[in-house]
Image 1 (cartoon, one colour):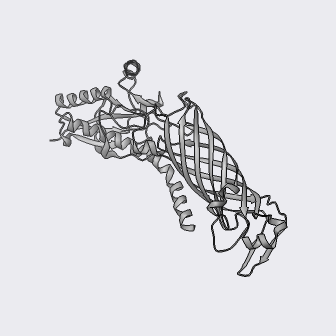
Image 2 (cartoon, one colour):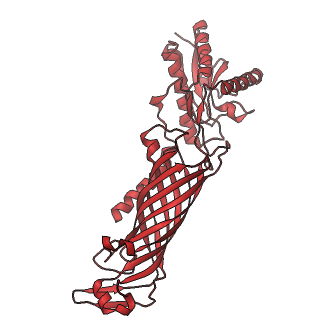
Image 3 (cartoon, helix red, strand yellow):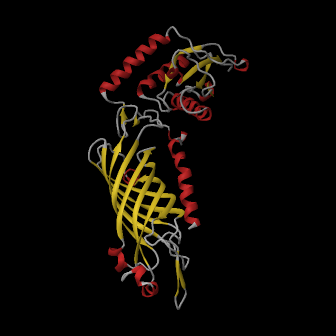
Length: 403
């Protein structure tokens, strides 16, 4: 049980890392589609669940399942970090039934009755890692209605309300079978599947099937170093809240859409008009002997370092400038805006932006590598103080070509 707990904790701790990892080797200069940029309060949901459970433990055999079924109710709150990975916290209230040993039944018929059944309740809270298997093994589609989601969780179980209020011990012929009906709290683990069907944009119908495990004291009976628990199956409704875009699901950006391209072109033209009268503030270094800052820049979307087709035209202008001015070289300097992410991440992001531009100049426009130098500032320098988003940029600074 300890090994399984360590594995689950490791998975849960590693979960946030999946949201921000990027690889420079995969830069594609003309990539113009992808998911929107989402914030912490996007893609949250709440779920209401009801169903049934069957307890597992000492003395319960497959033939007894029909006698130990009880109702379960649940409430869950969570979010998805990506179409494939999410997390939730789920609380459950279960009405459970245990079964006493046959020797206890024969010795205490007034307590256990003919079948030896006794009732108790369980309150549980689990933190689950969610893995949308449909989106992991196939491409995410906004139109997909059916999804299979796997989950593993770690939490606590608190049992109470045993229907006999005393503690009794039976000294059977083979061994004692102590039954303690005190309230008890123990670590709980579980794993299961959620079958999810989208009824509408905000609402899903979900079937949760889970195996829930706890320690040997869960059902009040302790012996044989046995782990107790229960199987649960619940039907639920899951409501998805709106994100800051006004949508309720992950959405792809398609930059080839005519309306979107027209809007981007208008924004770019407006920005160019403003940039004509605004010269960026660049950090000068004596050892570089900077001469001038080019008016042409390469802009990026938030949290991105791929170069769109529109910005590729600016890179072409820079290549043309180098061709017409053999007396100078260029420093390709990347920046990131200060209002997004954190300094270490922004420093790497600005480096990736500079490298993407450098690679395009060399590979697509045949610029000699020795005429280029890569530099990057992260968010330590904000060349454009007028608008924060302008600082998602690569700026070109000239220096003498001494060859």
